[in-house]
Image 1 (cartoon, rainbow, N blue to C red):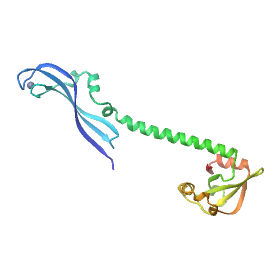
Image 2 (image 1 turned 45 degrees about the horizontal axis):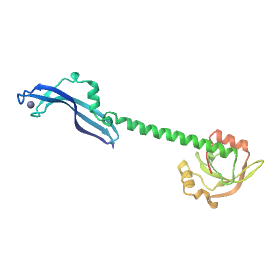
Image 3 (image 1 turned 90 degrees about the horizontal axis):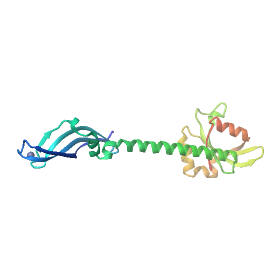
Image 4 (image 1 turned 180 degrees about the vertical axis):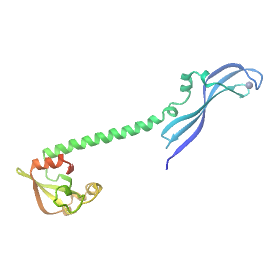
Length: 212
Ligand SMILES: [Zn+2]
């Protein structure tokens, strides 16, 4: 559900000068007041609506309507706390930080993959979609892992996982939980893949990630 909330706020804009008050019939000093509605979305994204200005008598607290155009816009703006006016910036900033963080993480990951691909080591774990290699494939999507058993001049020897997933999360979980590091995770005959073939599989996206 959306979490929208609003609250009424009252701030002093400036001293409204000395005026004759029709309520208490005195020459009294006034304050220019601004009433506004503070709206927020999940208490993070905030904005202001419904600005209403009036004069407040310091003697009797009587009020007198005032035309908004007589208020100095700068003073009116300064009266409202920054995050009431510009709270939406927080939301935008949070979103930006997230996107930038994700982009940097993605680039670092790609850079890491390049390093691993250039100098393979025993134990490196490759994520791939076996369905793109098998002909005909057992399933439409086959996310699975293979682990380097040996690095030979003519190619890289991989052990293949005994099972695959239709979702990428499956292999991610196996890596995170440490399952993919166990010896029983892999089985069958090892396969040998020449380096240039490995490179091609990565470039075309059949290999999606490498973990070390
Ligand atoms: Zn008064």
